[in-house]
Image (cartoon, rainbow, N blue to C red; front, side, top):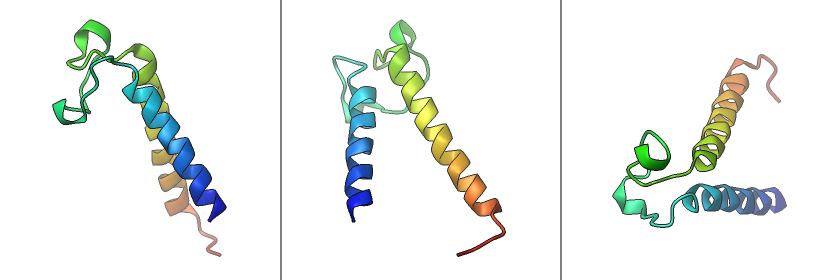
Length: 73
């Protein structure tokens, strides 16, 4: 239960960093767009794009490595 709370707080922090990359953040205006700065429809910063790529890639790798594990507990 404590791990879930810590994970939820960490996830909220990640979403805050991503969302704060743009002063005019609106979740209904298209959260998943390509580009950054002037090339981004939402005006997201390079830092916001980098953080989202790192976090999503980490989750992807964790899922792949978990699926490839031969030892189940």
